[in-house]
Structure formats: structure tokens, C-alpha cells
Image (cartoon, helix red, strand yellow):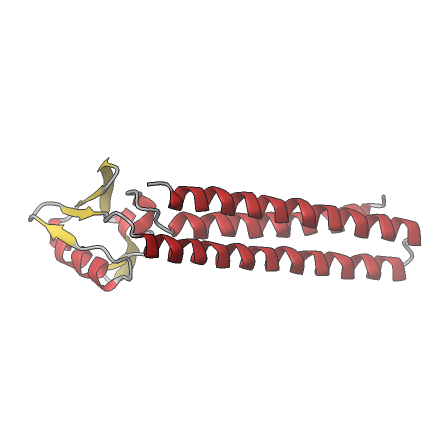
Length: 187
């Protein structure tokens, strides 16, 4: 294969990898009934004139599988952190004891599990759309390379390789979803 065709294939694969990485990040944010500090990644507080992620203003730990403990480095931020958690749509009820904030993660109901699986499936479908878009862009590039002088056989082989990548990364997306579904379904 020519250097241009190899580059087209690499760019397509990088784009597909990015879709999988995004899927994993999004699924990581969906809580499955277990305490995980990354559940709070979306929370930021106004601190010293700028919005800062919670992880930059406090220590977040998990003393047990159902509890998150937030210990701010500056106790003046306790109320701000508590307010942001309440205003977030995480469904968590912070308990402020004056030095730390404790978050008890409730056990998931069957209905909530179903909703989380549905949300995970939607994220997986979004990733697959990204993979298919990468395939479409790669195929367009292959067609353009053929117009620019790439042989028809090499163009066909490039398109076949792009389809193989599409199948590979779609399967990876399905496996990532299956793992998350199993995690949500387990008690």
C-alpha cells in the first residue's frame, strides 16, 4: 500500500479509537451503585475567582463500597461543595459534619438499573455512529486517492481494510457495553 493509503488507514483508526475512548469515559461516569470518585468529575466549585473541579479543591476517598468522603483542603469550601452536589443531577444527598462531606450511595432499584443500562446503550450507539462516520471519512479519502492516481485494486483493499477496522471497533464498543451492563446488573 502507498504511504498516502497507510496514512488514511491510520487516521481512520485513530478516529475510531477516539470514539471508543469517549465511550469508556462516558460509561465510567454512569454510576453502578458502587462508590467511585469519578462520579464527582462533573462537579466544579467557584473558588478564588474561577471554577475548579472538585478533585482540585478536595481529597475524595471511598472508605467502603457505598460511601464517598470529600475532605476539602479549605474548610470554607464545605458549603460550596455541598451546594454543588445538591444542585447536580447525581441524586446524592451530602451529609456535612463540619470537616468532611459524606455521600452514601443508595442501592439501585430495578427501574434505575434499567434506566442506566438504557443510558449506557445510547452512549454505545453514539460511539458506533462515530465509528461509522470515521469509516465514511476514510472511504471518501480512499475515493479521493483513487482519483489522484491510486490504483483501483489498492483503493478497494484500503476500503476493505477500513471496513475491517469498523467491524473491529464496533465489536470493541459492544464488549465495553456488555461489561458495563454486567456491572450495572450485578448487586
